Image 1 (cartoon, rainbow, N blue to C red):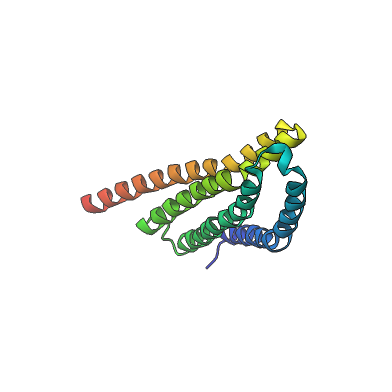
Image 2: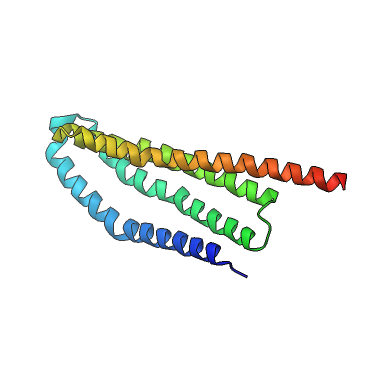
Length: 169
């Protein structure tokens, strides 16, 4: 039986997934088209690497969405374990570990694929705030990975304590 809290969390996770999927299908191609137009006009002003960096941008956007959707799926699995009263299990620890790795992968792919083009546009427009916004977006998964790692460690310690208590009784 679904509790109200896990039902709400499932709804939020599904909503986030649908929004990102819609962005991936409709908004990302528009961003890529605009980026290509600007890149064609500005490539000589910035550097010869701009064409290569512009090529990594779509790869970075779409590649970062893959671990994002994997993490969302893992979150849904964790919520199902919570509903089944299996939250304090090794499966939950494994899911938190997977979420942590997905968040780190998102950060790495974003920093490698998206941040170079943001830096080039910031350099072109003389807008250092654009780089700061990109860094905030890029390092947000690090916060999530840290939170997942802390939860993973706490959950592992709780499982260890529970197994010790089960053995002593």
